[in-house]
Length: 375
Image (cartoon, rainbow, N blue to C red; front, top):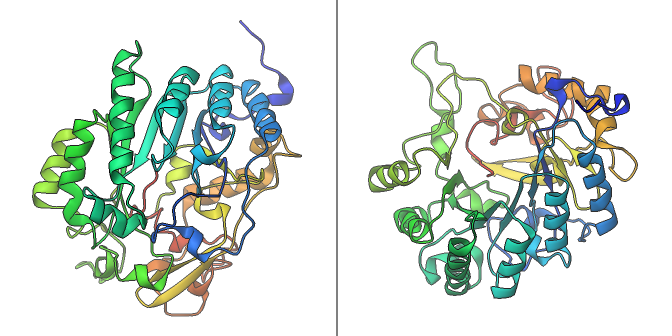
């Protein structure tokens, strides 16, 4: 039996199972749904030397985490994205990547298959060129579908049928009627997974598009306690029947029962997230400062991280008191319910809440309430 390097020893409960890595925060689209509309940040690509350093850390790590290449940019726009996939596979990781599919031309598809990519997620928020363009602000759907049809044929010829394909759909008022047709597309493309999320409103205009709205503020009969829950408005009828039938075991769609406390999905996955410049944090949304609009109120989320992997090793990060303390805080989830309160000015920014929690105060996070999903 191989002995574990004591310098890399990490308590089992604190070991990473998944590492989200943002290759770039640049994108070739300007989607109306994107967090990038509220940014005042520098744009850039992760240096390949930094990625190599992270992979070296991972390779020596006890229990190889999965690697998810994606964030708030287009990973296929990184000039060395295929090398990143190949290096992560050589390190022994299962590798996923999310893309808008525009750059997935014949050559890129061949290179990703050869590199050993395990799972490709593609975002499709409309079933027609018109509805897709209404969300993504670009008439690229025919090109994306042609790219995915070519990839389907390459996957059929690949002995391992890799990469598996997942389709990601962000639901809002302007596109929810397209959901059954997008599910049909997913079936035609032989997708094995489907991720369904509400939209998060990063601009005031997008607040008008949310499907959850009033559902967040419905009072429960026993005692009148106000808690968030996923309402029947989101998917029903034909769409609900179809999504359940086509993806009974591989649908990413979290719900919370009335009265249930929040649950951080990134904690549940035992994951951490790395920004393109190397800063490491607990989740994707806190990699970048942003503002969210909900029921006439805005809430600012400053970025939050534990340092940079330029200087830290992953073992240093996982063994740090700050990370372990924050994980315990997330497990307890004793945050004020800022999403459903707004009775003071503390919900305006997540620096603190009325329960005494300090930055980040996660009670206003819609990801933790099951409304927002990431594959």
